[in-house]
Length: 167
Length: 233
Image 1 (tube, rainbow over the protein chains, first blue to last red):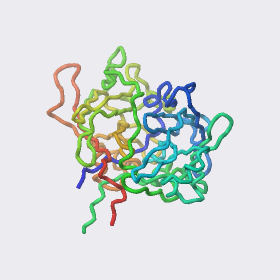
Image 2: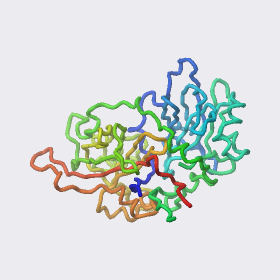
Image 3: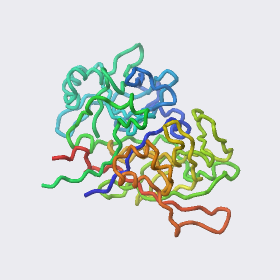
Image 4: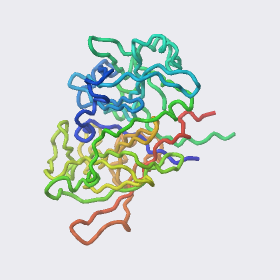
């Protein structure tokens, strides 16, 4: 019998003055070797972007961590380094990926997903977590090249809903 | 064998009384991963968050004394297995004594206080203890079907695991606005609501001079490695 957990509550829309700081969206310097920018929209069930100040994401893996809020168009942008493949608890190998949590007004608890990389076709096909995602939805977790950046949109609800993980 | 009682009283994503959830709650089933994957996966590293030693005293961030009732808010951070969570970041943010946030997105109904920002940070000590000194936040008019949101302090914690990341709100015991607040009442069990109530502590209350402070205690319990939302038969 454990302790009762403190339940989650929404961030509300008025967090920016406290949680955001200079450079918080850059897990690595933009000019460092291997740095890649990941951008995307966060949209609701009607396809309406969660524009400033509605939400922010955190992205992390290993020693990397970034926190980025959406702008007036509902677009976030983070700078990360593509991680190496990782050994998993069952002895297989996870494709390079970053964990992504979404916080927003109207989210009583954060959502958890992952972003994978488009140039890792073979590794993605063998990734044990992607295998748990319905086949038709796996592409929704793989960022798409778009000019100099990788595009990763997050749809909270609906037809092309981003797969989210229970935790 | 008896099923272990769930001690996870997190709110559902969809809670129509809090209208903003209606178009933001996922409609598909969340993907369940084997126990051991996420519960033992490490959480984010917060070492880049700038923390100054004085960040836990929100009453001393400006030249003058902020308006309002000075309080202390202190307690321990534990995990759901009962272990202390040392050396973890706590970030807080709140209104001033009039109910205004110093945030550009604040609607501006209430007055700002030039001596109060309302943002603080600290790191738990080796026994998981934390301590803030601040101004008691105020209730403020909301657009959520309630007349006012009850006074609260937003609180963000990392813990060590992917599953321990928590953003919540600390409320104050005895506030009659809590019973009609759709955000607090989204928690499906009164024991969960109790967890978010800071308790007045008469013995710790500092009296006697201008720096007096009412003491409130609030322990925070993060998801521990043994906990799982899928612990069903």
